[in-house]
Length: 157
Image 1 (cartoon, rainbow, N blue to C red):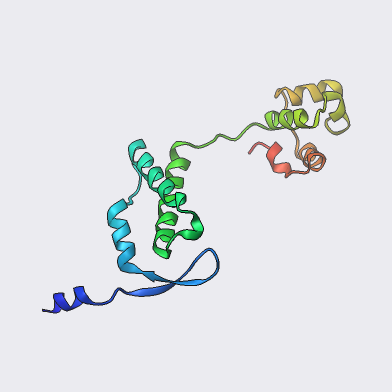
Image 2 (tube, rainbow, N blue to C red):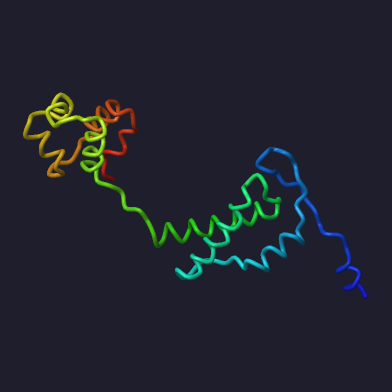
């Protein structure tokens, strides 16, 4: 008899924040139903990763502003699971400093001679731009200032 009373009890609700800043009621039973449909779990294969992305895309098609508090919480959970898998299995390697330098030189239309005041002689500048010599911390700071970015992108840790 007690189980029957519990099953008919009203869903437990707690306050949740919507992206618009309005407080909304979080319904644990609705959330449980969403969880049972999507069955989120730690991703262990590409197939599970693909399933997780499919569910994320389904939620995003509704528009984040249109998600219920329960759907919003599920989206957070699924996104975290997908990000963890991506970090472990689809990591983007850091680019070496000279490649980043080449990229910014191309964007700005700079030549090696333009960087000689920062990097040094013609041979040193050439060696740095071509990855045969590392960028020093002082050079990285000056390059960061020149390009308006953090100097850490040019340092190799």
